Image (tube, rainbow, N blue to C red):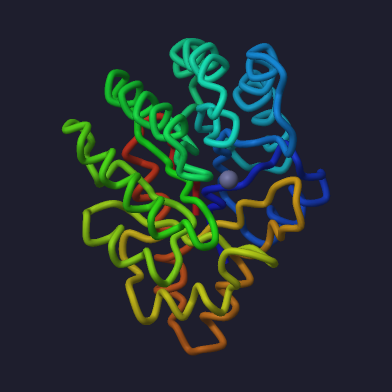
Length: 269
Ligand SMILES: [Zn+2]
């Protein structure tokens, strides 16, 4: 089995996790910038985090034979403080030059507030200005449908965003079809306590679409499982999906989306 982990918060994971992922067939890891589990006090905290994502974590991943890529932004939760958000965003263009940065993300909404939406729109402008791909986080629980719609409206209102270069992550049964219908890619996040289980994810693949979709574990500092993508692959095999269909979903699909950024080097088979 080979796969790509397109959304893993590896700065929170141990070297045992890296080893387990490599043994399970992981060929590349992408890490979007996100909330660290606590609110950072200043832009300096983000400067160090961006250095960690672009300089230090790739070296850690390389020890296990995996290339590590990053996406940069200030996450929706901390962007509620618009002064801080603007300071952090001003640092991003310099980091976009790093050879392993694929785009802007994971931007989006947390509680669907006015400030979050303004900073989301500013990130979309930044991405357009610098011709960057976009990775979007959608809010959880009851606000997901509304937040996803607000996000798609803002992306459309920008007027210069190419939907095929945007992935909207954490889709669920009630948001996935709308995301795909608008031409975006959809990410299904596998998570033990919230989001989708491997079984639910495979149900969605079977009933909604296996095209323009990736699976990810979003493994972070909370209770999460860095092996949930290969576990979903086992569930597909149990249900009789072909090896080619599994490979297409967990390796081919993310590779196709990510290769739109010339910095992404397709991992060897
Ligand atoms: Zn995430």
